[in-house]
Length: 227
Image 1 (cartoon, rainbow, N blue to C red):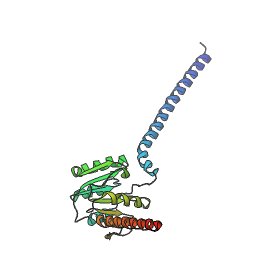
Image 2: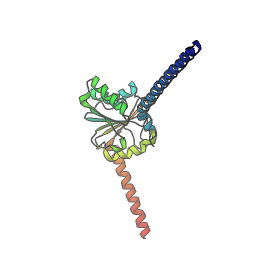
Image 3: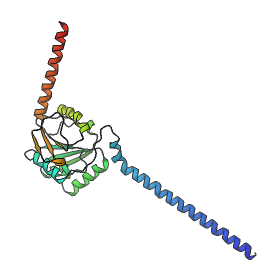
Image 4: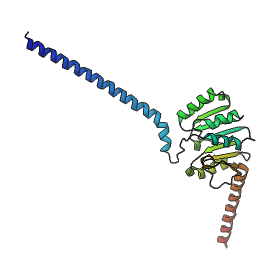
């Protein structure tokens, strides 16, 4: 074999090896990118999906002042407590430390799992529970204390839900935004740390009065139409 043929053969082998190496590298890069996108989708979906809902309850961690204001508002209370949209569980865990049997409802599974881990790490897992659930599909009738970090778009609808479900002995603490029609018995804090405290007996009686007035008005209209 001539030197030229030998050189040509070696050059061809080098090109083939380089081509195979590039092909393997391309497969590895494609696999890594694809795996990263799948992982990113798995992590991001629970955070993005709630934002696609008609009423979005975003995760904004409670400040230390907010937690303290909630606990101060409920300092004379005991029994069961629920945090609607519990996020990373800090309200539920703090309430459990103060003797409440506390539960949290949160749509984001990653935050629920993290909350359960935090409760276990801080030794209050026996008096806490965290649930992956849409708040509109849950009944809050069993809770005597309710905490909600809501948004203005949902407060009207949530008023009606809590009015129909809560016992008259319940207390409701709204953080960041008040309920539009209820009259708070107490307000604490300022700015984003403000909390509004509501007595269920008051807003349920207000609901009853409204229903009576509506019925009376409808009966009067019926009577007039019959004249």
